[in-house]
Image (cartoon, rainbow, N blue to C red; front, side, top):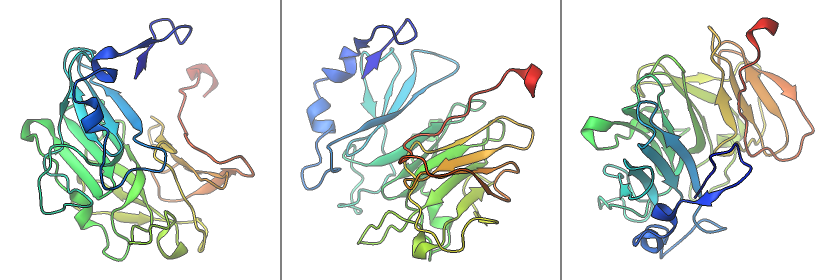
Amino acid sequence: MFRTADGGVTWDPVDGWNDHAMWTTWAEWPEQNTPDGSMLHSITIDPRDPAHMYLGLSAGGVFETIDRGNDWMAINAGCEHPLRPDVDLEFGHDPHCLRLHPLQPDRLYQQNHTGIYRMDRADARWVRVGRNMPSQVGDIGFPIELHPREPDTAWVFPMDGTDVWPRTSPDGHPAVYRTRDGGASWVRCDKALPATAWFTVKRQAMTVDDAESVGVYFGTTSGEIWASADEGDAWRCIAAHLPEIYSVEFADPDPSIR
């Protein structure tokens, strides 16, 4: 992990993470690891307190600091381990994407290697809300995004999570799924998406805007960007023939040109 205080001109290592006494243990998944090793992602800052941060570590788990990164602790209670689902392990998990709600910062969501989870921080335990997804689709995927004003609303893009792990749309039928009740129920959102397509959407390749009717966007590894202007109800392709897309972000335009 590195930090910049000048807009990216210079960077300094965050020694509290990089040199933590537990780092090699947290980042090690003895039986199996991601193809390129552990990946740090989803660095998320509590808007109430810049010293309070979370991050996701693939093949490690979710970690929290309350002192600007000088020390860290694992917060993975309730997450199933892909190799030891019967044991509540402190670390060794594989979060794919972690999100914190900006207006309710004690509400966290993650899309994990083993499903979709929600945590209300006071409970200090993750709940697998993805069990409420349709069983034929499952709750395995890479991205998860939150409504900017509604803490109970989120979007995911499921992939085939069978033992073969194709990492593409289940049965070749792509769809976004939306919850408006904190994961208690999910609705399929696929209007105008291709009836058959083997999409892969990576962990940072979905985002939302802050419009009155929230726009939702995702990019595929085949170089397409899809957009919905009505919170997922309908979709259209807004770009194609791009290189493989790793990340999609919304930038708020100048209000005068809206």
